[in-house]
Image (cartoon, rainbow, N blue to C red):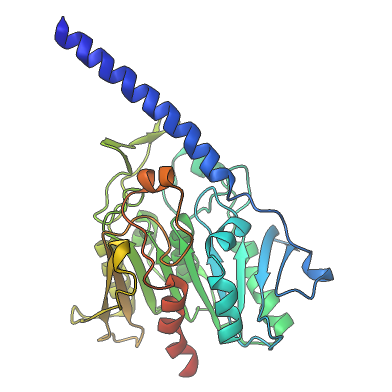
Length: 344
């Protein structure tokens, strides 16, 4: 009887903590709801918002231009994580995306997934009822990219894709399924989908995958997301698929790009020793396609973009690991990508 009372007390504590954590999480997420900027049609500012409409649908987006007024010669497309927005992802970047656009004289496009829950149809859990209701944003996003390339006068091929979490998985899907190849593709805390592995990829594309080893939202080793000791194996009463691991994601891209297992390893400077992380980049350059694959492994890292704003404590607990402050993840990805613009 005493044991039952103890167990009952523990259950109450867990319920109370989980309930309080949920409310704290909701309050923490609210700060990502950033106000809209001036409409791009009426703005001379370096960052503005607009709505794009084509025969494929409509899409809200934020456009970031060089602050010095330089004419951009290329574009980086940044896709937000599930439940976020273009404005929220831009705010999280803590000025890094604006600085990158100005320094490199490029456009940065942040698009909204739209729909009721702001989730990209990235290929994961295709048979889940929620996933089946998601709009497929790929056609209209490709229309938007082509429209901006034409408006600003640069080659449509001079576009790179990168995304955070759900947005990174979507970036990989777009890179594989678009008719015109992209210069490069990258992700932060994102697995390739089982669907993409089965479907394959139409283009060899230079790829950089950044993933924290302690990420429990999209686990480095694959499997199910965790909260404390509990795994998430279903959503709204329906089972979900286990996620692909980060090493398997790299294997997928090595296969697509025709890379051997020969690799070189470098370590990024530990400019903030207090953050408890260290990033090693394992690069596979021996590729028949000429498109290398890089694996940025953030030791002790959690589910975030390095160099972004630090997530609130409750979200850090729920997403796992530590936040890397040694570098801007977007800068490292663009440095990787620049080589392929200079060669073409």
